[in-house]
Image (cartoon, rainbow, N blue to C red):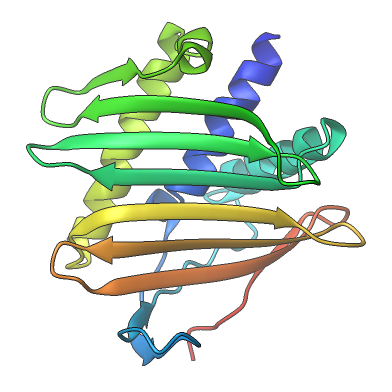
Amino acid sequence: MKRYRLTLVLTFLCLFLLYPLSTCMSASEDEDEAGQAPARRIFIHIHSGITTYPVRKVLGMIITKSGEKGVYTIKGNGMLEGNGIWKLDLTFFDDKGKEAKSLKWQYLREQGILTPRNKEAEDFSFPFSNYLLRTTINMGLGMIEGQGVSPKTIDGNAERLADNQWALNITGLTDNGERFIQEWSYDSKEGVLSPIQFDH
């Protein structure tokens, strides 16, 4: 049970904040199919090596556990509601799109206080995960802000496809209305994470 709890916590960290392991960020602009405002394409390169081993290991564990439990989609959402208050959600869905589990927190950034907002989150709010989440959220937001981006929302999505393949992405909106996006493909059998767009 403790291992499953840790898996859920690490799922949240990966989907909501992969930014602490970013090595570079680029700003090419594209317009999406819906004709919305141009989005800044960011580049987060999670290459092989010691510095990125934790996120690759965690991602592999998340995908494996999700597959074993019949999860086909994982969504992570964060929204800044003012005064440094973030609302954070992590939701798992089965192959029919039915919600299997949802975890919700409130995070007071200045005070470093992470509070469960539903019973499911309470079950996973043991001291280690609480500390791990707070530390990683602060690191991630700091890295984003260090690149001149002031995020208002951050969303992560992982979708299970055929033949061990997954599609992953993070999107966000800044406080001045600028959108940003990063997309990957993931081969769960080989453990290979590849960015859809590249830094060139």
